[in-house]
Length: 192
Picture (cartoon, rainbow, N blue to C red):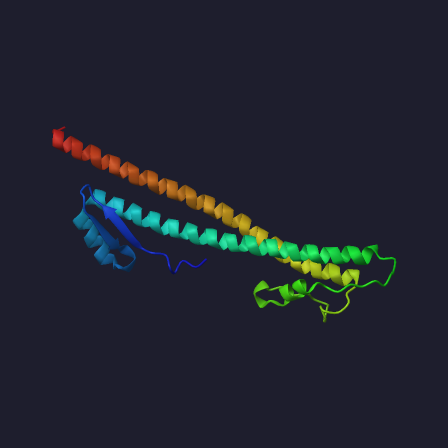
């Protein structure tokens, strides 16, 4: 997951009509501490929750993009496995005991694409005539890739759910701090 483009800029609006943008990700520890001391406990807490929310949101978006790509790749791998399965059926249904079939060019191109990282052991020439056993070997290699990608998608869904729960907690915590700030200011202004 590439989060290098994730922004760390947080826009905090105090109880006034002005807002200030702080880039906590590019500030030193001392600068952050000084800023929090200047803002006060409530605004510092709100700023911190806003920053964490933005960072978590960016991670969630990146994870969703990764999951989406894995889902597309899994669908493609399954499609290729189905094409090989059709060739296996052709060979097995043939009356010729020595029947062989050629892989569709799409499947050969898919296997040979380095990004797909598929290795078929025991078969030297994928473009030649292949027996049912050879076709089963090819299908197994592609199916393994599809299964691995499906696992990535399932794990990503769980991670996104956890991230969503974290975002909900951060929203709730920020709301609680704002409510506490309001009650504190009200109590001070009313003299209670």
